[in-house]
Length: 448
Image (cartoon, rainbow, N blue to C red; front, side, top):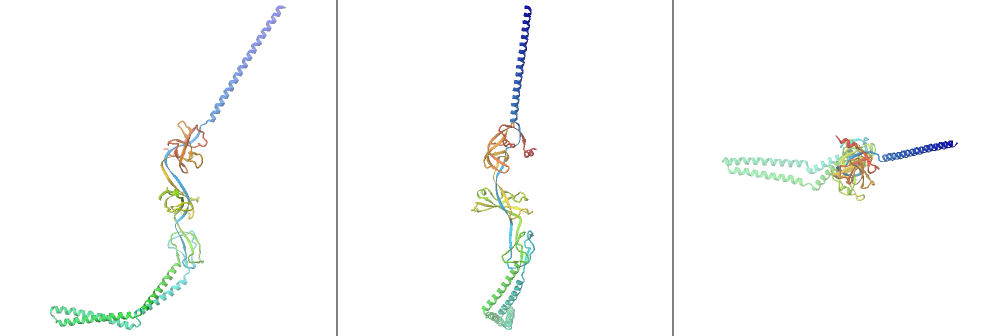
């Protein structure tokens, strides 16, 4: 009995020991599971942190160019008006009905071409009367000058001719007898007789000349002056009517396009009234008002870019041909002229165009594309540029800018030239970002 109890107690102890061993195994296993779970959690947390860090700092693809030294100039712009090189307002100089005139608007006319004919039958009749009056005045003047007795004048002219012939005959006789006398052929008495005849003939000639002159001067000087004045008046009347008749045919003074036509065939044209406006647009002048402070930097011959406001016209290039000598006191501007060829007629007279002149040029400036600079404000002279180093890391760099154009900016301070700057993808790019540079398309084209 006692032995059975002792055996039962040993069995109980053995069972208790086995239970304790199982509990210890379970506890150790649970601890290992917990440790493994904790390790797995920590590994996953570290992996997530690493992935998050990788997502925050990615590699950004950007386009870059080199900051190079080159030329740049300040663009100065103003809106100008397109004027034809030559312009003429053609009008009537006399009042008359338009007898003949075609539809001329927008048509080409040449210098000297007839563009209108005015009614002139009344002027032609007046000219015919004036010619008759002129002929009458001339006849009266001739009658007064030659005298009122034609027979007496004819006799005086005959006596004058006879006296001249007698002198010539007496001189020839005297010359012959003097030659004979020198050879001893005649006596001195005969020679003296011939000399007397010559002297008498010369005296008679002088007497006859004085007679004709006295008869001419014996006419009333006032009558002669009055007759001459009437003849001149009649001539002037004919000349005036000839001029008025020439005004009846209206010709083009220049070669050009008829831009406006104010009157037409059949209408009554008044003296001084405009008929048409003709403009020579083969060459045009763009007149633009520039600020007087900017004109000081301009000179004749500077290259100019002209962009008409008409969208159908293309950008054109010309030169400054004239700088105004005076300034407009109202808006403080100076007129600048730019002459452009317009053979194709694309530029319209009185149209508008933007004139841009490059002034204050620099030949050795550090120049970058305008897209590379982020300005603090649109009119600021300071900004930032993203510079890419040798490790392809972008660094924000403060710069001071100078001359600005549409597509280029001068860097006065902050760059030395030769740096690689971001021109696309630089907006809101954090400092120190890893980037993947790609050459700009224009720079790629320059490479061989």
